[in-house]
Image (cartoon, rainbow, N blue to C red):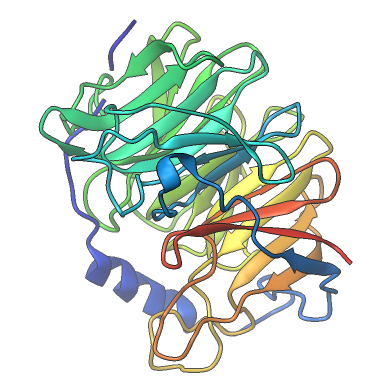
Length: 349
Protein backbone atom coordinates (compact mmCIF):
# COMPACT_ATOMS: atom_id res chain seq x y z
CA UNK A 1 0.00 0.00 0.00
CA UNK A 2 1.45 3.34 -0.94
CA UNK A 3 0.73 6.85 0.34
CA UNK A 4 0.57 10.34 -1.27
CA UNK A 5 -2.47 13.33 -0.28
CA UNK A 6 -3.70 16.89 1.19
CA UNK A 7 -4.57 19.85 3.57
CA UNK A 8 -8.16 20.60 4.74
CA UNK A 9 -9.70 23.64 3.13
CA UNK A 10 -13.39 24.48 3.38
CA UNK A 11 -15.04 25.55 0.13
CA UNK A 12 -15.28 29.31 0.02
CA UNK A 13 -18.75 29.59 -1.43
CA UNK A 14 -18.69 33.37 -1.50
CA UNK A 15 -15.58 33.45 -3.69
CA UNK A 16 -17.04 30.84 -5.99
CA UNK A 17 -20.35 32.63 -6.25
CA UNK A 18 -18.64 35.95 -7.03
CA UNK A 19 -16.72 34.35 -9.85
CA UNK A 20 -19.91 32.79 -11.17
CA UNK A 21 -21.73 36.14 -11.09
CA UNK A 22 -19.01 37.59 -13.30
CA UNK A 23 -19.26 34.61 -15.63
CA UNK A 24 -23.05 34.88 -15.78
CA UNK A 25 -22.82 38.36 -17.30
CA UNK A 26 -21.77 37.06 -20.69
CA UNK A 27 -24.67 36.73 -23.16
CA UNK A 28 -25.85 33.41 -24.55
CA UNK A 29 -24.24 32.72 -27.91
CA UNK A 30 -24.16 29.69 -30.21
CA UNK A 31 -20.85 28.79 -28.55
CA UNK A 32 -22.16 28.77 -25.00
CA UNK A 33 -25.82 28.07 -25.69
CA UNK A 34 -27.30 24.95 -24.14
CA UNK A 35 -28.98 24.16 -27.45
CA UNK A 36 -32.48 24.66 -26.05
CA UNK A 37 -33.99 22.93 -29.06
CA UNK A 38 -32.41 19.56 -28.31
CA UNK A 39 -34.91 16.92 -27.24
CA UNK A 40 -35.49 15.24 -23.90
CA UNK A 41 -36.14 11.61 -24.84
CA UNK A 42 -35.86 10.40 -21.23
CA UNK A 43 -38.20 9.58 -18.35
CA UNK A 44 -37.39 8.99 -14.71
CA UNK A 45 -37.44 5.48 -13.21
CA UNK A 46 -39.25 5.60 -9.90
CA UNK A 47 -37.73 3.94 -6.84
CA UNK A 48 -34.34 3.04 -8.31
CA UNK A 49 -31.74 1.91 -5.73
CA UNK A 50 -33.91 2.40 -2.65
CA UNK A 51 -32.94 -0.87 -0.91
CA UNK A 52 -29.78 0.25 0.88
CA UNK A 53 -27.79 -1.84 3.38
CA UNK A 54 -28.73 -1.75 7.07
CA UNK A 55 -32.07 -0.15 6.17
CA UNK A 56 -30.44 3.24 5.91
CA UNK A 57 -31.52 6.16 3.75
CA UNK A 58 -29.42 7.78 1.06
CA UNK A 59 -26.89 10.38 2.17
CA UNK A 60 -25.61 13.19 -0.01
CA UNK A 61 -23.76 11.98 -3.06
CA UNK A 62 -22.22 13.41 -6.19
CA UNK A 63 -20.23 10.29 -7.07
CA UNK A 64 -21.62 7.75 -9.56
CA UNK A 65 -20.06 5.69 -12.33
CA UNK A 66 -20.81 2.63 -14.45
CA UNK A 67 -18.34 -0.24 -14.91
CA UNK A 68 -17.73 -2.40 -17.98
CA UNK A 69 -20.30 -4.94 -16.78
CA UNK A 70 -22.99 -2.31 -16.63
CA UNK A 71 -23.09 -2.20 -12.84
CA UNK A 72 -23.52 1.16 -11.11
CA UNK A 73 -21.13 2.31 -8.38
CA UNK A 74 -22.03 5.10 -5.99
CA UNK A 75 -19.98 6.74 -3.26
CA UNK A 76 -22.46 8.26 -0.80
CA UNK A 77 -21.92 10.03 2.51
CA UNK A 78 -23.08 7.37 4.97
CA UNK A 79 -26.73 8.41 5.16
CA UNK A 80 -25.79 12.02 5.94
CA UNK A 81 -23.36 14.56 4.47
CA UNK A 82 -20.24 13.06 6.05
CA UNK A 83 -18.79 9.68 6.93
CA UNK A 84 -16.39 11.15 9.50
CA UNK A 85 -18.04 9.51 12.50
CA UNK A 86 -19.70 6.60 10.72
CA UNK A 87 -18.85 2.92 10.35
CA UNK A 88 -21.13 2.45 7.34
CA UNK A 89 -19.79 1.37 3.95
CA UNK A 90 -20.01 4.42 1.67
CA UNK A 91 -19.19 2.71 -1.65
CA UNK A 92 -22.15 0.79 -3.06
CA UNK A 93 -22.46 -1.44 -6.13
CA UNK A 94 -25.85 -1.93 -7.81
CA UNK A 95 -26.99 -3.80 -10.88
CA UNK A 96 -28.79 -1.81 -13.58
CA UNK A 97 -32.17 -2.55 -12.01
CA UNK A 98 -31.11 -0.93 -8.74
CA UNK A 99 -30.53 -4.11 -6.76
CA UNK A 100 -27.67 -3.75 -4.27
CA UNK A 101 -24.78 -6.15 -4.92
CA UNK A 102 -22.24 -5.15 -2.29
CA UNK A 103 -20.81 -2.29 -0.25
CA UNK A 104 -17.32 -1.46 1.00
CA UNK A 105 -14.99 1.22 2.38
CA UNK A 106 -16.17 1.62 5.98
CA UNK A 107 -14.03 3.79 8.25
CA UNK A 108 -11.82 5.17 5.48
CA UNK A 109 -13.62 8.30 4.30
CA UNK A 110 -14.78 11.70 5.52
CA UNK A 111 -16.54 13.09 2.42
CA UNK A 112 -16.51 10.68 -0.55
CA UNK A 113 -16.57 12.83 -3.68
CA UNK A 114 -15.58 10.88 -6.78
CA UNK A 115 -15.71 7.23 -7.87
CA UNK A 116 -14.23 5.43 -10.88
CA UNK A 117 -13.85 1.79 -11.95
CA UNK A 118 -10.83 0.89 -14.08
CA UNK A 119 -10.47 -1.79 -16.76
CA UNK A 120 -9.31 -4.33 -14.16
CA UNK A 121 -12.49 -3.79 -12.16
CA UNK A 122 -10.67 -1.99 -9.37
CA UNK A 123 -12.59 0.82 -7.68
CA UNK A 124 -11.07 4.24 -7.05
CA UNK A 125 -12.62 6.85 -4.77
CA UNK A 126 -11.62 10.35 -3.71
CA UNK A 127 -12.17 11.91 -0.28
CA UNK A 128 -12.22 15.69 -0.48
CA UNK A 129 -12.19 16.52 3.22
CA UNK A 130 -10.15 15.54 6.26
CA UNK A 131 -10.79 14.94 9.95
CA UNK A 132 -9.14 13.04 12.79
CA UNK A 133 -6.40 11.49 10.71
CA UNK A 134 -8.42 10.37 7.72
CA UNK A 135 -9.52 11.90 4.43
CA UNK A 136 -7.77 13.98 1.77
CA UNK A 137 -6.89 10.82 -0.13
CA UNK A 138 -7.51 8.78 -3.23
CA UNK A 139 -8.02 5.09 -2.42
CA UNK A 140 -7.94 2.11 -4.78
CA UNK A 141 -9.89 -1.05 -3.90
CA UNK A 142 -9.94 -4.49 -5.44
CA UNK A 143 -13.39 -5.73 -6.58
CA UNK A 144 -13.78 -7.53 -3.24
CA UNK A 145 -12.98 -4.40 -1.24
CA UNK A 146 -9.32 -4.91 -0.35
CA UNK A 147 -7.34 -1.65 -0.20
CA UNK A 148 -4.66 -1.76 -2.91
CA UNK A 149 -3.26 1.77 -2.84
CA UNK A 150 -3.65 5.08 -1.06
CA UNK A 151 -2.52 8.34 -2.61
CA UNK A 152 -2.15 11.23 -0.22
CA UNK A 153 -1.43 11.55 3.48
CA UNK A 154 -4.43 10.67 5.60
CA UNK A 155 -6.02 13.76 7.09
CA UNK A 156 -3.29 16.09 5.79
CA UNK A 157 -4.06 18.84 3.28
CA UNK A 158 -1.31 20.24 1.07
CA UNK A 159 -0.18 21.21 -2.40
CA UNK A 160 2.88 19.02 -2.78
CA UNK A 161 3.49 15.87 -4.83
CA UNK A 162 2.33 13.63 -1.98
CA UNK A 163 -0.62 15.64 -0.64
CA UNK A 164 -4.00 16.82 -1.87
CA UNK A 165 -6.32 19.62 -0.85
CA UNK A 166 -9.85 18.42 -1.52
CA UNK A 167 -9.40 15.90 -4.35
CA UNK A 168 -12.61 15.77 -6.35
CA UNK A 169 -12.25 13.06 -8.97
CA UNK A 170 -9.96 10.41 -10.45
CA UNK A 171 -9.58 8.56 -13.77
CA UNK A 172 -7.10 5.96 -15.00
CA UNK A 173 -5.37 5.90 -18.40
CA UNK A 174 -4.96 2.77 -20.52
CA UNK A 175 -1.37 2.38 -19.32
CA UNK A 176 -2.42 2.68 -15.69
CA UNK A 177 -1.44 6.33 -15.17
CA UNK A 178 -3.60 8.06 -12.56
CA UNK A 179 -5.13 11.52 -12.98
CA UNK A 180 -6.63 13.35 -10.01
CA UNK A 181 -8.65 16.59 -10.10
CA UNK A 182 -7.61 18.40 -6.92
CA UNK A 183 -9.29 21.46 -5.42
CA UNK A 184 -12.79 22.50 -4.36
CA UNK A 185 -12.50 26.19 -3.39
CA UNK A 186 -12.50 29.12 -5.80
CA UNK A 187 -9.50 31.39 -5.38
CA UNK A 188 -7.81 29.40 -2.62
CA UNK A 189 -6.36 25.95 -1.97
CA UNK A 190 -5.52 23.75 -4.93
CA UNK A 191 -6.76 24.04 -8.51
CA UNK A 192 -4.88 21.41 -10.46
CA UNK A 193 -4.70 18.03 -12.12
CA UNK A 194 -2.09 15.70 -10.62
CA UNK A 195 -0.65 12.80 -12.62
CA UNK A 196 0.85 9.65 -11.09
CA UNK A 197 2.29 6.46 -12.51
CA UNK A 198 0.37 3.20 -12.09
CA UNK A 199 2.36 2.46 -8.93
CA UNK A 200 1.55 5.83 -7.38
CA UNK A 201 4.70 7.80 -8.16
CA UNK A 202 4.21 11.50 -8.82
CA UNK A 203 4.83 12.44 -12.46
CA UNK A 204 3.59 16.01 -12.89
CA UNK A 205 0.82 18.49 -12.23
CA UNK A 206 -0.82 21.31 -14.15
CA UNK A 207 -3.31 24.06 -13.46
CA UNK A 208 -3.53 26.92 -10.97
CA UNK A 209 -6.26 29.42 -10.13
CA UNK A 210 -7.68 31.58 -12.90
CA UNK A 211 -9.82 31.53 -16.01
CA UNK A 212 -7.16 31.23 -18.70
CA UNK A 213 -6.46 28.09 -20.72
CA UNK A 214 -5.20 25.40 -18.36
CA UNK A 215 -6.27 27.26 -15.22
CA UNK A 216 -9.14 26.16 -12.97
CA UNK A 217 -11.63 27.39 -10.43
CA UNK A 218 -12.99 24.23 -8.80
CA UNK A 219 -12.00 21.29 -11.03
CA UNK A 220 -15.06 19.42 -9.79
CA UNK A 221 -14.89 16.24 -11.91
CA UNK A 222 -12.67 14.50 -14.44
CA UNK A 223 -13.20 12.03 -17.30
CA UNK A 224 -11.22 10.35 -20.06
CA UNK A 225 -12.28 9.51 -23.63
CA UNK A 226 -11.31 6.71 -26.00
CA UNK A 227 -8.36 8.76 -27.29
CA UNK A 228 -7.03 9.22 -23.78
CA UNK A 229 -7.88 12.91 -23.64
CA UNK A 230 -8.55 14.31 -20.16
CA UNK A 231 -11.80 16.25 -19.66
CA UNK A 232 -12.05 18.48 -16.57
CA UNK A 233 -15.29 20.02 -15.28
CA UNK A 234 -14.01 23.53 -14.51
CA UNK A 235 -17.15 24.44 -12.61
CA UNK A 236 -16.81 28.07 -11.55
CA UNK A 237 -15.44 28.98 -14.99
CA UNK A 238 -18.48 27.27 -16.52
CA UNK A 239 -16.58 25.19 -19.01
CA UNK A 240 -15.09 21.79 -19.73
CA UNK A 241 -11.40 21.91 -20.49
CA UNK A 242 -9.73 19.20 -22.57
CA UNK A 243 -6.06 18.20 -22.31
CA UNK A 244 -3.70 15.54 -23.52
CA UNK A 245 -2.12 13.34 -20.86
CA UNK A 246 0.88 15.63 -20.53
CA UNK A 247 -1.37 18.54 -19.60
CA UNK A 248 -1.29 20.27 -23.00
CA UNK A 249 -4.44 22.39 -23.37
CA UNK A 250 -6.49 21.28 -26.37
CA UNK A 251 -9.89 22.96 -26.13
CA UNK A 252 -12.59 24.39 -23.88
CA UNK A 253 -16.32 23.73 -24.26
CA UNK A 254 -18.98 26.02 -22.81
CA UNK A 255 -22.04 24.43 -24.39
CA UNK A 256 -22.62 22.06 -21.46
CA UNK A 257 -23.51 24.76 -18.92
CA UNK A 258 -21.98 24.84 -15.46
CA UNK A 259 -20.40 21.38 -15.19
CA UNK A 260 -20.42 19.68 -11.80
CA UNK A 261 -20.07 16.15 -13.16
CA UNK A 262 -18.75 14.60 -16.38
CA UNK A 263 -18.73 11.00 -17.60
CA UNK A 264 -17.67 9.55 -20.97
CA UNK A 265 -18.67 6.04 -22.03
CA UNK A 266 -16.77 3.63 -24.27
CA UNK A 267 -18.51 5.05 -27.37
CA UNK A 268 -17.46 8.61 -26.48
CA UNK A 269 -20.92 9.67 -25.45
CA UNK A 270 -20.41 12.47 -22.92
CA UNK A 271 -22.78 13.10 -20.01
CA UNK A 272 -22.53 16.40 -18.12
CA UNK A 273 -24.41 17.29 -14.93
CA UNK A 274 -25.23 20.98 -14.52
CA UNK A 275 -26.40 21.55 -10.96
CA UNK A 276 -25.78 25.30 -10.80
CA UNK A 277 -27.50 27.09 -13.68
CA UNK A 278 -30.83 28.88 -13.85
CA UNK A 279 -32.37 31.51 -16.10
CA UNK A 280 -35.21 32.80 -13.91
CA UNK A 281 -33.51 35.23 -11.53
CA UNK A 282 -30.64 37.44 -12.70
CA UNK A 283 -29.93 38.56 -9.12
CA UNK A 284 -28.76 35.11 -8.06
CA UNK A 285 -25.22 33.84 -8.59
CA UNK A 286 -26.53 30.76 -10.36
CA UNK A 287 -27.98 32.90 -13.16
CA UNK A 288 -26.56 31.59 -16.43
CA UNK A 289 -28.24 32.99 -19.55
CA UNK A 290 -29.18 30.26 -22.01
CA UNK A 291 -28.78 27.42 -19.53
CA UNK A 292 -30.79 25.67 -16.87
CA UNK A 293 -30.16 22.80 -14.47
CA UNK A 294 -30.14 19.26 -15.71
CA UNK A 295 -28.11 16.65 -17.56
CA UNK A 296 -26.74 17.31 -21.05
CA UNK A 297 -25.74 14.45 -23.30
CA UNK A 298 -23.64 14.71 -26.42
CA UNK A 299 -20.52 13.63 -28.25
CA UNK A 300 -17.04 13.78 -26.77
CA UNK A 301 -15.73 13.69 -30.32
CA UNK A 302 -17.14 17.02 -31.51
CA UNK A 303 -18.89 18.49 -28.45
CA UNK A 304 -22.37 18.52 -30.00
CA UNK A 305 -25.18 18.46 -27.42
CA UNK A 306 -27.86 16.00 -28.52
CA UNK A 307 -30.17 15.66 -25.51
CA UNK A 308 -31.06 17.52 -22.33
CA UNK A 309 -32.84 16.18 -19.25
CA UNK A 310 -34.21 19.25 -17.43
CA UNK A 311 -34.34 18.98 -13.65
CA UNK A 312 -36.06 22.08 -12.23
CA UNK A 313 -35.25 23.21 -8.72
CA UNK A 314 -37.98 23.78 -6.11
CA UNK A 315 -38.90 27.33 -5.10
CA UNK A 316 -36.41 28.81 -2.67
CA UNK A 317 -33.65 26.34 -3.51
CA UNK A 318 -30.69 27.53 -5.58
CA UNK A 319 -29.75 24.08 -6.83
CA UNK A 320 -30.99 20.54 -6.55
CA UNK A 321 -30.02 18.84 -9.79
CA UNK A 322 -27.51 15.99 -9.70
CA UNK A 323 -23.83 16.89 -9.42
CA UNK A 324 -22.69 13.42 -10.44
CA UNK A 325 -23.64 11.66 -13.67
CA UNK A 326 -23.00 8.42 -15.55
CA UNK A 327 -24.49 6.44 -18.44
CA UNK A 328 -24.77 2.75 -19.24
CA UNK A 329 -24.63 0.85 -22.53
CA UNK A 330 -28.40 0.37 -22.64
CA UNK A 331 -29.16 4.08 -22.64
CA UNK A 332 -29.69 4.47 -18.91
CA UNK A 333 -28.57 7.74 -17.30
CA UNK A 334 -27.79 8.08 -13.59
CA UNK A 335 -27.67 11.30 -11.58
CA UNK A 336 -26.26 11.57 -8.04
CA UNK A 337 -27.77 14.38 -5.98
CA UNK A 338 -26.10 16.12 -3.03
CA UNK A 339 -29.09 18.23 -1.98
CA UNK A 340 -31.97 15.76 -2.33
CA UNK A 341 -29.76 12.84 -1.27
CA UNK A 342 -30.54 10.21 -3.86
CA UNK A 343 -29.51 8.62 -7.14
CA UNK A 344 -31.97 8.90 -10.01
CA UNK A 345 -32.14 6.77 -13.12
CA UNK A 346 -33.49 7.94 -16.45
CA UNK A 347 -34.28 5.76 -19.47
CA UNK A 348 -35.38 6.54 -22.99
CA UNK A 349 -39.11 6.82 -23.51
